[in-house]
Length: 124
Image (cartoon, rainbow, N blue to C red; front, side, top):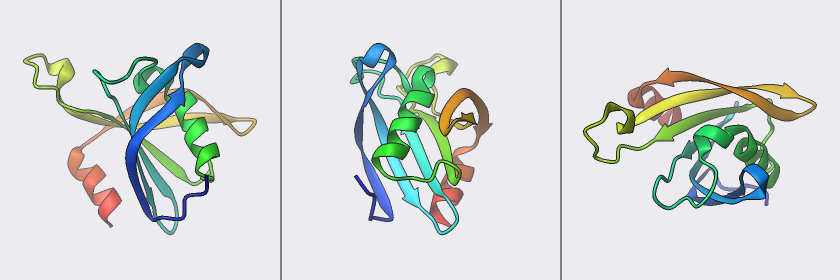
């Protein structure tokens, strides 16, 4: 699928580890210089691999399916607040950085980012 719209927001089905059917929230924002892709955990509705574990799997699939240049994309991991008392389940955003080997994303690394920075990034 070629992404012709500037913006997309949907539940995305992807092949997780061992090709297990998996789901995440997917937001794509096309900008002149890069594409922003936000991958959101769906704690309750995901039957398979989490985005936190399989970020590289879903990143490769999203770029292929939506014809996104993998050298001009920025990935953000979104863990939504689920209303728990535990800090682990509070809303959090992280840039996901990958090594690009043979045109395939590998070895994900995270860098925490604020919600305000994400909002500014997608709204500029």
